[in-house]
Image 1 (cartoon, rainbow, N blue to C red):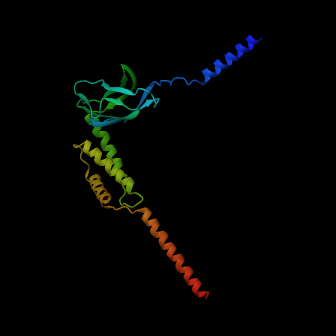
Image 2 (image 1 turned 60 degrees about the horizontal axis):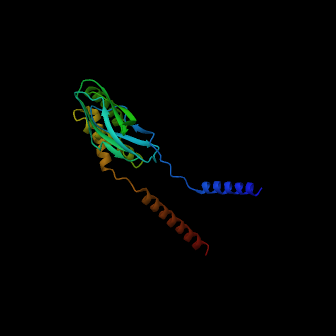
Image 3 (image 1 turned 30 degrees about the vertical axis):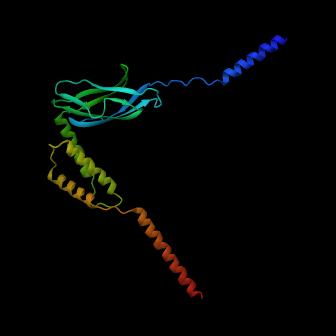
Length: 225
Protein backbone atom coordinates (compact mmCIF):
# COMPACT_ATOMS: atom_id res chain seq x y z
CA UNK A 1 0.00 0.00 0.00
CA UNK A 2 2.87 2.31 0.90
CA UNK A 3 4.35 1.73 -2.53
CA UNK A 4 1.04 2.70 -4.18
CA UNK A 5 0.83 5.93 -2.18
CA UNK A 6 4.48 6.65 -2.95
CA UNK A 7 3.88 6.13 -6.68
CA UNK A 8 0.83 8.44 -6.62
CA UNK A 9 2.80 11.05 -4.66
CA UNK A 10 5.74 10.92 -7.11
CA UNK A 11 3.36 11.21 -10.06
CA UNK A 12 1.71 14.26 -8.44
CA UNK A 13 5.12 15.90 -7.93
CA UNK A 14 6.09 15.16 -11.55
CA UNK A 15 2.89 16.68 -12.95
CA UNK A 16 3.16 19.73 -10.69
CA UNK A 17 6.79 20.39 -11.63
CA UNK A 18 6.11 20.03 -15.33
CA UNK A 19 3.08 22.32 -15.14
CA UNK A 20 5.18 25.00 -13.45
CA UNK A 21 7.91 24.93 -16.09
CA UNK A 22 7.33 27.69 -18.64
CA UNK A 23 7.45 26.32 -22.20
CA UNK A 24 9.73 27.95 -24.73
CA UNK A 25 8.23 30.95 -26.52
CA UNK A 26 6.40 29.87 -29.61
CA UNK A 27 7.96 31.17 -32.82
CA UNK A 28 5.24 33.08 -34.67
CA UNK A 29 5.63 32.66 -38.40
CA UNK A 30 4.42 35.00 -41.10
CA UNK A 31 1.34 33.73 -42.90
CA UNK A 32 0.57 36.43 -45.47
CA UNK A 33 1.08 40.06 -46.47
CA UNK A 34 -1.90 42.34 -47.12
CA UNK A 35 -1.37 44.91 -49.88
CA UNK A 36 -3.39 48.01 -50.76
CA UNK A 37 -3.03 50.20 -53.86
CA UNK A 38 -5.16 52.50 -56.01
CA UNK A 39 -7.38 50.73 -58.52
CA UNK A 40 -5.98 52.77 -61.43
CA UNK A 41 -2.40 53.99 -61.86
CA UNK A 42 -1.38 56.74 -64.26
CA UNK A 43 1.03 56.11 -67.11
CA UNK A 44 3.78 58.13 -65.38
CA UNK A 45 2.95 58.02 -61.69
CA UNK A 46 4.66 57.57 -58.35
CA UNK A 47 2.70 54.81 -56.64
CA UNK A 48 2.43 54.10 -52.91
CA UNK A 49 1.52 50.56 -51.89
CA UNK A 50 0.61 49.93 -48.24
CA UNK A 51 1.53 46.57 -46.74
CA UNK A 52 0.73 44.77 -43.49
CA UNK A 53 2.27 41.50 -42.35
CA UNK A 54 -0.11 38.90 -40.88
CA UNK A 55 0.32 38.18 -38.00
CA UNK A 56 1.84 41.55 -37.13
CA UNK A 57 4.02 40.02 -34.38
CA UNK A 58 5.69 37.51 -36.71
CA UNK A 59 9.28 36.82 -35.69
CA UNK A 60 10.80 37.25 -39.15
CA UNK A 61 9.27 40.02 -41.28
CA UNK A 62 12.08 40.42 -43.78
CA UNK A 63 10.62 40.76 -47.28
CA UNK A 64 12.05 41.04 -50.77
CA UNK A 65 9.87 43.01 -53.21
CA UNK A 66 9.73 42.56 -56.98
CA UNK A 67 7.55 43.46 -59.95
CA UNK A 68 6.67 40.95 -62.66
CA UNK A 69 4.96 41.43 -66.00
CA UNK A 70 7.34 44.07 -67.35
CA UNK A 71 7.77 44.41 -71.11
CA UNK A 72 9.44 46.76 -73.58
CA UNK A 73 8.05 50.25 -73.05
CA UNK A 74 7.12 49.65 -69.40
CA UNK A 75 9.46 50.43 -66.51
CA UNK A 76 9.16 50.35 -62.74
CA UNK A 77 11.76 51.78 -60.35
CA UNK A 78 11.78 51.36 -56.58
CA UNK A 79 11.79 54.81 -55.02
CA UNK A 80 11.82 53.14 -51.61
CA UNK A 81 13.98 50.11 -50.87
CA UNK A 82 13.13 46.80 -52.52
CA UNK A 83 13.59 45.10 -49.13
CA UNK A 84 11.72 45.76 -45.88
CA UNK A 85 12.00 44.57 -42.30
CA UNK A 86 8.85 45.84 -40.59
CA UNK A 87 5.35 44.51 -39.97
CA UNK A 88 3.77 47.38 -41.92
CA UNK A 89 4.74 50.31 -44.12
CA UNK A 90 4.76 51.57 -47.70
CA UNK A 91 6.47 50.58 -50.91
CA UNK A 92 6.96 53.50 -53.29
CA UNK A 93 7.30 52.83 -57.02
CA UNK A 94 7.83 55.06 -60.04
CA UNK A 95 5.87 53.59 -62.93
CA UNK A 96 6.11 54.54 -66.59
CA UNK A 97 4.05 53.08 -69.45
CA UNK A 98 4.91 54.38 -72.91
CA UNK A 99 2.69 51.86 -74.71
CA UNK A 100 -0.63 52.86 -76.29
CA UNK A 101 -2.54 50.38 -74.12
CA UNK A 102 -3.06 49.62 -70.45
CA UNK A 103 -0.87 46.98 -68.80
CA UNK A 104 -1.20 44.87 -65.67
CA UNK A 105 1.89 44.32 -63.53
CA UNK A 106 2.16 42.39 -60.26
CA UNK A 107 3.98 43.48 -57.14
CA UNK A 108 5.11 40.53 -55.03
CA UNK A 109 6.36 40.22 -51.45
CA UNK A 110 8.56 37.16 -50.90
CA UNK A 111 10.74 35.62 -48.23
CA UNK A 112 13.28 32.90 -48.95
CA UNK A 113 11.69 32.24 -52.33
CA UNK A 114 8.14 31.90 -50.99
CA UNK A 115 5.58 34.54 -52.04
CA UNK A 116 3.46 35.81 -49.13
CA UNK A 117 1.58 38.60 -50.86
CA UNK A 118 0.85 40.00 -54.29
CA UNK A 119 -1.23 42.77 -55.83
CA UNK A 120 -1.99 43.82 -59.39
CA UNK A 121 -0.83 47.22 -60.61
CA UNK A 122 -3.27 48.39 -63.30
CA UNK A 123 -1.20 50.91 -65.22
CA UNK A 124 -3.08 53.00 -67.77
CA UNK A 125 -1.87 54.26 -71.10
CA UNK A 126 -1.18 57.97 -71.51
CA UNK A 127 -4.49 58.56 -73.30
CA UNK A 128 -6.56 56.72 -70.72
CA UNK A 129 -4.74 58.47 -67.89
CA UNK A 130 -5.54 61.86 -69.41
CA UNK A 131 -9.21 60.96 -69.85
CA UNK A 132 -9.54 59.80 -66.23
CA UNK A 133 -7.63 62.74 -64.76
CA UNK A 134 -9.70 65.28 -66.71
CA UNK A 135 -12.86 63.82 -65.16
CA UNK A 136 -11.30 63.86 -61.68
CA UNK A 137 -10.19 67.47 -62.08
CA UNK A 138 -13.64 68.48 -63.28
CA UNK A 139 -15.26 66.88 -60.20
CA UNK A 140 -12.69 68.26 -57.75
CA UNK A 141 -12.77 71.84 -59.03
CA UNK A 142 -16.55 71.72 -59.31
CA UNK A 143 -16.75 70.90 -55.60
CA UNK A 144 -14.77 74.00 -54.54
CA UNK A 145 -16.68 76.65 -52.60
CA UNK A 146 -16.87 80.20 -53.92
CA UNK A 147 -16.38 81.65 -50.46
CA UNK A 148 -13.91 80.26 -47.94
CA UNK A 149 -14.73 80.30 -44.25
CA UNK A 150 -13.69 78.52 -41.07
CA UNK A 151 -16.13 75.67 -41.70
CA UNK A 152 -15.03 74.78 -45.24
CA UNK A 153 -11.39 75.90 -45.19
CA UNK A 154 -9.82 72.47 -44.53
CA UNK A 155 -11.96 70.72 -47.18
CA UNK A 156 -11.13 73.32 -49.83
CA UNK A 157 -7.45 73.28 -48.91
CA UNK A 158 -7.38 69.50 -49.36
CA UNK A 159 -9.11 69.77 -52.76
CA UNK A 160 -6.67 72.42 -53.97
CA UNK A 161 -3.74 70.21 -52.93
CA UNK A 162 -5.20 67.23 -54.84
CA UNK A 163 -5.68 69.37 -57.95
CA UNK A 164 -2.11 70.68 -57.68
CA UNK A 165 -0.81 67.11 -57.41
CA UNK A 166 -2.78 65.91 -60.45
CA UNK A 167 -1.62 68.87 -62.55
CA UNK A 168 1.98 68.31 -61.48
CA UNK A 169 1.81 64.62 -62.39
CA UNK A 170 0.17 65.43 -65.74
CA UNK A 171 1.93 68.58 -67.04
CA UNK A 172 0.51 68.17 -70.54
CA UNK A 173 -3.07 68.61 -69.33
CA UNK A 174 -4.63 72.04 -69.71
CA UNK A 175 -7.73 73.14 -67.84
CA UNK A 176 -10.58 74.80 -69.71
CA UNK A 177 -10.94 78.56 -69.17
CA UNK A 178 -13.94 78.25 -66.85
CA UNK A 179 -12.39 75.50 -64.71
CA UNK A 180 -9.03 77.25 -64.62
CA UNK A 181 -10.60 80.54 -63.51
CA UNK A 182 -12.57 78.86 -60.72
CA UNK A 183 -9.54 76.85 -59.58
CA UNK A 184 -7.16 79.83 -59.48
CA UNK A 185 -9.73 81.95 -57.62
CA UNK A 186 -10.31 79.20 -55.04
CA UNK A 187 -6.58 78.58 -54.66
CA UNK A 188 -5.95 82.27 -54.03
CA UNK A 189 -8.78 82.39 -51.50
CA UNK A 190 -7.43 79.35 -49.66
CA UNK A 191 -3.87 80.71 -49.63
CA UNK A 192 -4.98 84.12 -48.35
CA UNK A 193 -7.49 82.87 -45.79
CA UNK A 194 -6.42 82.99 -42.15
CA UNK A 195 -8.47 80.47 -40.16
CA UNK A 196 -9.56 81.64 -36.75
CA UNK A 197 -8.22 79.93 -33.68
CA UNK A 198 -11.39 78.41 -32.25
CA UNK A 199 -9.77 78.09 -28.84
CA UNK A 200 -9.11 81.82 -28.73
CA UNK A 201 -12.64 82.60 -29.94
CA UNK A 202 -14.15 80.37 -27.26
CA UNK A 203 -11.88 81.90 -24.64
CA UNK A 204 -12.81 85.45 -25.61
CA UNK A 205 -16.51 84.55 -25.68
CA UNK A 206 -16.27 82.97 -22.23
CA UNK A 207 -14.44 86.03 -20.94
CA UNK A 208 -17.07 88.39 -22.33
CA UNK A 209 -19.84 86.25 -20.85
CA UNK A 210 -18.16 86.31 -17.43
CA UNK A 211 -17.67 90.07 -17.63
CA UNK A 212 -21.30 90.58 -18.64
CA UNK A 213 -22.51 88.39 -15.76
CA UNK A 214 -20.32 90.34 -13.36
CA UNK A 215 -21.73 93.61 -14.63
CA UNK A 216 -25.33 92.41 -14.14
CA UNK A 217 -24.52 91.23 -10.63
CA UNK A 218 -23.00 94.62 -9.78
CA UNK A 219 -26.07 96.46 -11.15
CA UNK A 220 -28.57 94.33 -9.21
CA UNK A 221 -26.49 94.59 -6.04
CA UNK A 222 -26.34 98.36 -6.36
CA UNK A 223 -30.13 98.62 -6.89
CA UNK A 224 -30.85 96.49 -3.82
CA UNK A 225 -28.90 98.83 -1.53
